[in-house]
Image 1 (cartoon, rainbow, N blue to C red):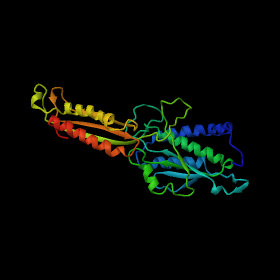
Image 2 (tube, rainbow, N blue to C red):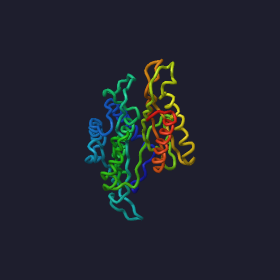
Image 3 (cartoon, rainbow, N blue to C red):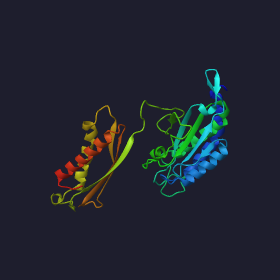
Image 4 (tube, rainbow, N blue to C red):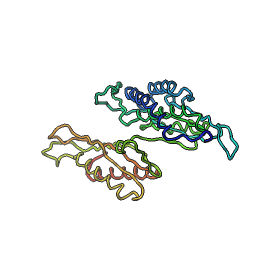
Length: 311
């Protein structure tokens, strides 16, 4: 950087100047949660805020209608040996934050509580967006002090609908200036305030969901011999699924199968005819996807057949 390095104190002052606006933006975004690929109000709020906080940042046309993308160009010349070159030839990095909320009801009563019934920012994406908007404002204010370019993207549809993949397929990483690296983060309550945590390799697993319906034969609780108990069968399914990772997956390859819901019956003296399980499968290695799905299906089929139940 021929204009001189940006010191920690100078950078800290720039962050502190922007912090109140970033906090206010988070509260505004928290009030208007929107789920995957429907983040129209969120995108409008981000665009208007960026125009006010970072007027020198370039806002670019969206790729997926609800994404917000842009560019901050460093104005310092790039030194190649002793010969300066144009800023356009410098390196470029991309900063990313997710936008979407979850289909949950917010119950806590706060001034910035969700105004959209059945929608809530329960995964911290409002904070991620506020942090990225603040970072854009800081970078735009220091553009004369660094070379190269910083692209930024507020990504819709992170939860379940693959918004990141859709952006890549639409050419996000091919547009000039092309980024040499992409940086993202996720808030984590278990990490002390002011600390960052990182691991070599992937940090967040791929996640699949499953639903299992076990069909038995209902009956009276006093005569279980005349019924095919789906609760007992489903409970055995839950137990048996835990053996997949323990006995079918390489111990050096992280994976987890979690059954997170179990629904059956409505009366204290009636064996129901059905039980429903739902859960998640998570892994890092893409090759595990087929193995875990195949073994899950085999285990469910085998347990149900042994009990005389269907699935």
